[in-house]
Amino acid sequence: MKRLIAVGLLMMLAVSTRAALPDDYKVVLLTENFPPFNMAADSKNYAADHNISGINADIVREMFKRAGVSYSLTLRFPWERIYNQVLEQPNQGLFSTTYTPEREPLFKWVGPLASTGWVLLAKPDSTVRLTSLEQAKQYRVGAYKNDAVSQHLESKGFEPVNSLRDQENVAKLLKGQIDLWATTDPVGPYLAKQEGVSGLTTVLRFNDAQLFLALNKQTPDEVVNKLQNALNEMKSDGAIDAILRRYL
Image (cartoon, rainbow, N blue to C red):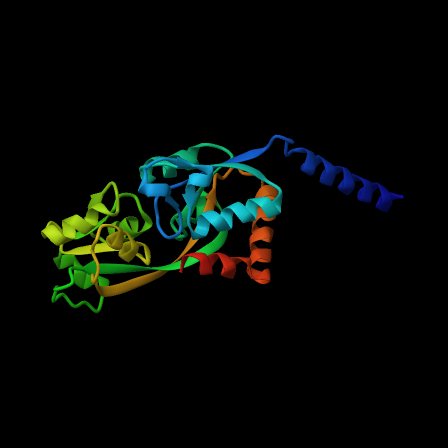
């Protein structure tokens, strides 16, 4: 009898847990221009829904579709603003967010969506050669404000010359306003190409990173689990590879 009561209580708890998610539940997704992972048509600083493309944008759309979770998707600028917004607002999410140990307790995470590397880029004719990140402290290093790369440099004692848009560092590099550009590969070279610049030299690759969907801490675990399961399924059935082939 006691066992039947216990089972009944567990069933009631399970139903109660499912009922906690309202029928009109929706996640507000935010992203930025971070090609080729997420980007707006014509590189605009604002876009919504179908005007947003990219590897991770397509992955996230399919992931939410398979999970049966409603969402809205908006691309905004700057990164610092939308990053802080998702930290503060329940049921909001942000991608493509680089996972770091420092950020881990700040969000709930779904991923990884993709893997990247952090690099220091120099002008095509640069003679700079580095074997460690510490050696870069003698140079002026440009970065993207509040990006994971910039945060990492600051944690290592750097004082990066931060820009509000990562592509601004292309012109700064060519004009000699910075000696090195700390960015993400393949994002940095892609942005440079969009600015008509090619042949930038990779003087150091100093970190490998993974990109995730970062969700506000108050996001229900049920939602997080549904999304992660959908992503795992996409990796198994070849959906991720199909999306990658469309862009790379």
